[in-house]
Length: 567
Image 1 (spheres, rainbow, N blue to C red):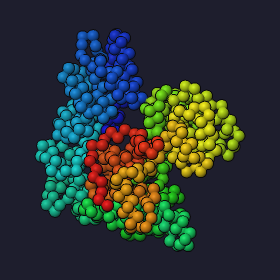
Image 2 (image 1 turned 90 degrees about the vertical axis):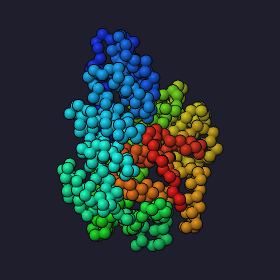
Image 3 (image 1 turned 120 degrees about the horizontal axis):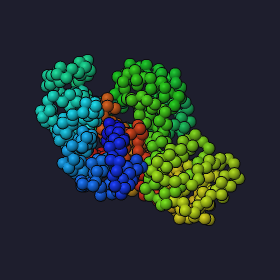
């Protein structure tokens, strides 16, 4: 689902409210209002159940068309596509004169696109009579057409709809991204001429399929420092690059050729500038790094000026990406982690009431704010929301002592400090051992806490980098990695592999301008991580509890079949 759909969903909620008859029966009115509120709270299954009874046409039910539309909205958001499709078709059949049928057709096209029914979706959009929806319809087409990876399917659509500009332009983009063959020259010229596209963009020498893509890794190897000191300080960079090299080999076995180049980019911004000024960097298809915030502005400016995509492999701060469409984060942002954790907590724990404690630090304050905001948005209640400072041990202990845990659904503690962890564990052991606790996975590394203490409590860990060591693919990778590097892979090695494999595949499917199609990729399982997707340019996060890998976000669009690589 794309932004155009979300915008029209909000618009239709308002239109439906305005279109309601003033003297409608009270029970219909109450049911309809409840359904609308449930959608706003993102409780889509409950909204569907609430709205369904009033979707049938009847002489006394003037709410039926609006309820049918909102039911379809909820079904689409819940990824229940057949239900959404049936309801919209019922709406078209039972209420052909409903004044908002154009919006219903737009929504039905969205559903059909999600189901992979591209031809029917295009037919539905071609029937739109509303000029105000034309621009959004064009964006909707391009959003989903970019998902098509089979050239024959796309060519059949072009034959069926030869005058569709969005379809033709997307095909031209596909040619530039990798489908181009010498015999396509006349086809591309005809598309550019017929639809008045930019000749410089589509008819340049760049409209050739690349045999290999070039990727630059700008990482702090610190080769100018003492070897022993640099090795200890920057082992993460070495591990990250080692994982990328493993992915390069795996991609090659699948016919995807990546030329990977390493550059030593540390904290010295002058050195980073020198690297970016070299001619070969400007010709790269993708840059990974640098990792330090001090170089972010320099790289952002370079990416914008040279229209090259840049991946920050380690930052969790969305401000690093800013508004630049060429800058992406591979790590989950603090905002994404907090919101998904809050959604998981709301859907898992009863009652829907929480106590939130957070450390007096920038990241923990931000995490708690996003978490609180999302939990309240979903309809939850916050019984207590308190800041702690673990450096003040007596004050911290007093906060925990004063907590009222009766009637609480879960406790959330956002701090990786030993004082906060110890107070939390002792409080739960003494007063509420069965109360669910949600916190950071860093607690597993606090030496003062034993695994037995943690195991006796119901603890959920926010752990974006969790890798299931019992998974057969992970075991095979670990074996191959150890054979190559004589050491087991670290979390950075797994991240390096996942990152290079994911973006290497994007380069092959869409070319260096894959950012134009990234939104249409939806969510998909990675090799090691449960879900990778880019909503706010941040990878989706996961929660681990008792060594069980639990996704805390709905993987709504896992229609893509992802084949695990042959290492």
